[in-house]
Length: 243
Image (cartoon, rainbow, N blue to C red):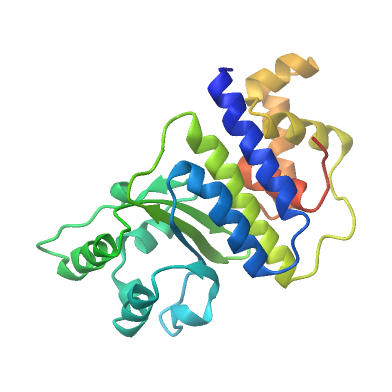
């Protein structure tokens, strides 16, 4: 790993440690503002994704958006046309706003959403979809004028965002009381937390890559996590593993 990766990983773990001491959503907002600014993020919103009969404002967990833009977004029901939300429903992988497709001629309301966001200083964005195994859908969407999104920064941002989401959920709901993970599942997630692939971990532990993948899949199922990074975030958040 490069020095740059270690710097980004260090920032991620400093952020994670700071969240453990927080007890309110506003505290999480303040911590995110301090740490995510390093990557160019100025605004973010953490929200559930509404069903057709729901309104999005009732699902927002926390936000730091320009007030006028938030009011306009709610008043015009932009969540129904937002290409970022549409893509959130279709993938579990984090993505840049520019990767959310729409045709401005065929979907003028989608273009209106993205152009409106840009006018309020939200020219670029990065979104983390969250899908629970029970069907729960949510996202953490972050934005700014000029973002530092590279192959080095994205893994750190992904973990930080997932951990922030889990911290807010933990503050608002009861924590996991007992550790459902086996010793080997915990060990596998610890190596994943420091950036090791399934192949790397298999070589470290002297087992097959298929075995490591099975441990990760089992941990994801037990923690109601959609992928490895989500499982790591949940395990760290609830102190089921230690780094």
